[in-house]
Image (cartoon, rainbow, N blue to C red; front, side):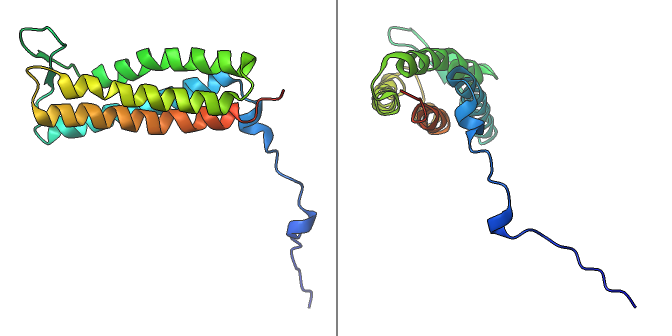
Length: 156
């Protein structure tokens, strides 16, 4: 009778994981991946709001009436505005003394400022204003942390 045992290495003998995965990724690529995730999440939020009966019509300041927000509009808006955030992150990674902190403070302040738009949107249902504001917060919550983490690993 023979007994076969499998030998698994102990935790102590296992090779260390490469923790450089995200840190080795370029800042712009981290931003792009975070942007795509944020855009998808906010578009799903918008689709759920539509399904719940929230009217997806909003007006810009000075407009005479609200215009329909098309399907894909949230996705496109997140991608458009995130390009500025990626450019900011790349610039801070190169020139800022504390890029993660500067990026976080700046983008959180810009996110708070972005909430003014939905709050004052004329000819826009309150439910739509709420969805727009929540979408700004959700996009920021998905996009800012990965970029800030990546910027915290910038070597000086």
